[in-house]
Length: 247
Image (cartoon, rainbow, N blue to C red; front, side, top):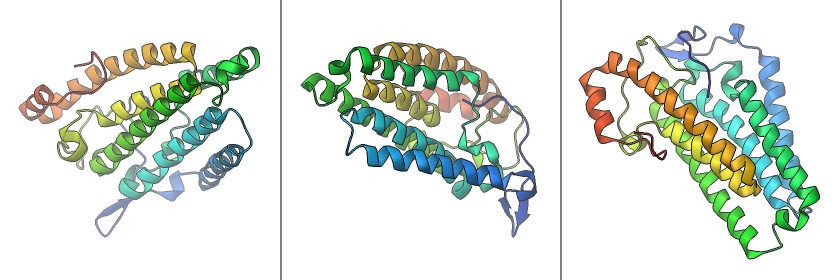
């Protein structure tokens, strides 16, 4: 979901390996962000045992864990591209508004339609929350696995020039999904709204994310063809995206 860019923070090379340049990253900001996400995770987890609206607590846990994993996986498997924004929280005003709308819908419907939102009320709500949670977990797994598999070739921004460490990854999860990180983010978002029992936000998320990834994939693949030529064309023709109606 990050913007297109052609530059990364210059890493420090030690024994042939790239590490983040701490002089170019605000360590206090990184620490405070991680601390804040940890507080949200901890409070939401403890609240599960006292709240009749377990799905909202699960959503907040999943949201904080998503951003923590974005930073942690980057730090472990792609440290040369690690920076303050690797939490992916500063992901544009649209991203912030989307989650605010989702939270607002959940709270308002909880006030005006409490029996619909109460996860202990009916089998329908239990099934919806459970299915949404499974879809969300699948999305999180696929996205993190994609970042791990790609390693140094993964970037939170679309590259418009080829770096020396940029290679075409086709093994592992990339042998089944052409853009597994996008697949993971899309289905994580869909699952989160199913879990929240948010019919309005579910439709909004599907429409907005589908349009975003449809445009982004088309844009990114123009450069991937420039970088890798027929090798990528052949790969694209044999491996799908996994997001409905995006080829």
